[in-house]
Length: 193
Image: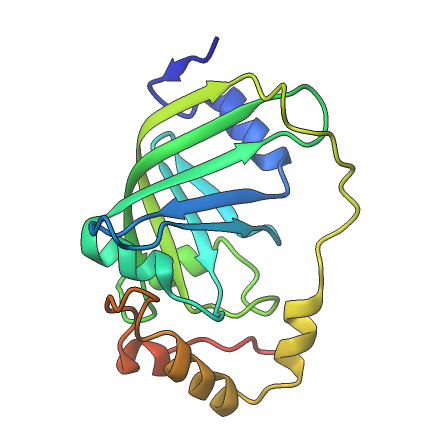
């Protein structure tokens, strides 16, 4: 039987830190719009306090989460244990897009290795509902390592070429919602190495 929690206590925070993968889900307000669910990894999630999560939203091929949050702020993070005892946690809340122009961007960037991954923006979530469930149906997988494909790809790109691709792919969602502005994309932080 699942439980509801009023905060991410120390036990939940330690469990989160042991996971290598999480899933992000958002949706537009339109009943005809596409629900978005994205897997994330590469050590991009942090607990800021008992009611706040943040993840590094690296540059990529889409901008669904950003567009949905700017329309309605709804988001859920789901994590499941692939190793050890079965467990699933869902963290429902209100999300905010933190771009390089935002006053909090630098303080959030300090929680991550800025040379390892690109920093398009952060997604900060005020967690309003925390629930768990058994996870009995989740298969066991053994973690091997994070993929290095993104890092290798970025080494083949110039900042100008990568920014140009973001300008093509990150201004509008698949449903036509506004994503990142050209000014936000041009402020993109390319890795230093």
